[in-house]
Image (cartoon, rainbow over all chains, first blue to last red; front, side, top):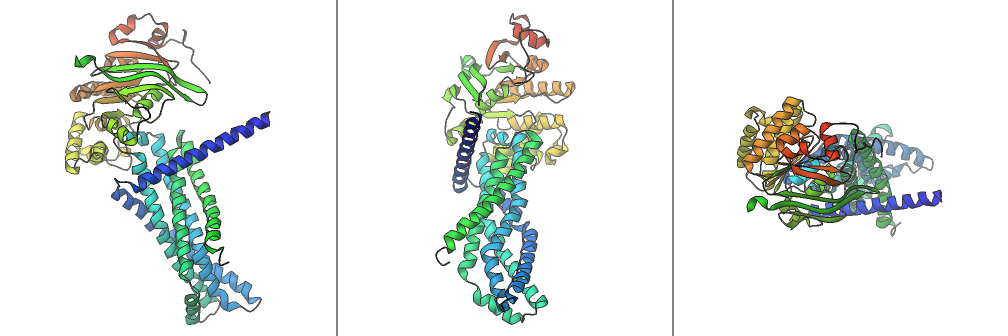
Length: 259
Length: 257
């Protein structure tokens, strides 16, 4: 009986969370597309997400590109296909590593700070105070972050793509002895528009996931400092897992047809 | 007569969290222009009552009306309209950390499309009204003491001259002198803006000073209500135990639940 009871309790808990998350997402999206907007807050969030994440995302991308070139060179040297290094770098960075690494880094940086900020506002009643001051918390807190996340992540990832390919180029040319113009020519020839575009679409979805998890966990945090800490952890962990899940789902959708 | 009109009415309100019933068959009436103080121990449902009125929580059953309009289960637009009549002073002041003092006070005004310059002017008036110096207008909440935060919170609550003011434990966390200053300010400011007020507190000094009428909440219901000067002579044992702060009596403090 105890077993059944705990199964029942977990099922109910899961359904309640799923329902609450769906409601939250729907409400937030509705407020994100309907006026009034808060241009100043949207801009502030865009700068926070887009501009201040640049160093972290850029560094991650450079090193990812560098290590990718090094590793694939080792692998390809075994069957004398070293020439494919540039192709592997550009394909992996634009399709996968750019969006996923940028997404994970931004979820650590932005998802956490959103959950902490909104969570603190929740436990100190600032969220309720918004309501009493003719301001809808969804419109004021959640919608601007959604808009900024969905629009800024693709831009960040585009920059990450450039940095990643550049990292591969550095290692290829200076460590592995490739001819610079050949390497660039290989990269250019092999790069397809859809590889980049699919990565940017992924980035947008990841931006949505990061802001959704940050806002959701912050919005429902309770119980003071510990609750806010918990919300921050949950926001980062859930966003990271969802990013990896959706990365697979989107890859399947985009590339299942052409293999 | 205008004075006897009902401003806020809660009828048979029930609110539970899971199996824990907080409000059960809760009835409350606040008349236009009066100041009602609701007293009661910790965790008896005072805050939940206030959150139901603000629309932050939705009761499972029962009716709540403000100015005769139902406010339970209404849409966002309608709720926004009701909220323009309300002002609230939160227990921890709940000032927005990222905004300066005057921006905090003007927040509700700018949200209602009052021009920034005009909103700033009104904010400065309210700063003076709560006895603060104009210099603090550009400070941030983290630079203020507890008493100053409460004053700024009060200034923000009255900024838009609301018809109804809610005070959540206005003196909690303040020293007795500052508490008394806040009490005086509340009496003075509400008279100035002519608002109906509903205060929740467990501070009897504050309750006697602010309230025209006092109601006591226990076990999710109002168990006694009457004019402030009658509370000492009422024959309700619960009220007597509470206002005299005795440990022995009908109220059993739930040490754990």
